[in-house]
Image (cartoon, rainbow, N blue to C red; front, side):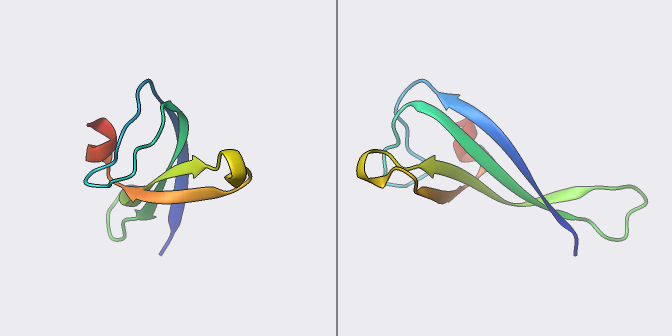
Amino acid sequence: MLTRSIRSKVTFTNAFRLGNSDIVFPAGAYEILFEEELLQGVSFEAYRRTATYLMVRGRGSHVGQTTMHMTTQKDLEH
């Protein structure tokens, strides 16, 4: 199975939560990572998204650490 990763940046102007999470993320620029897999058996190249992650860079005493928070496109749009 062939997979690919796509990275994108998004800026939130206000603090936010993802889905039902209790974590409140501060406003700022964040990287989004999309994982996709190649669909087999079709006559053209097509991919299906298998995962979406919000990459959160550490701040304060956690500088240098990055955490990945699984989310959905719907939660990001909300």
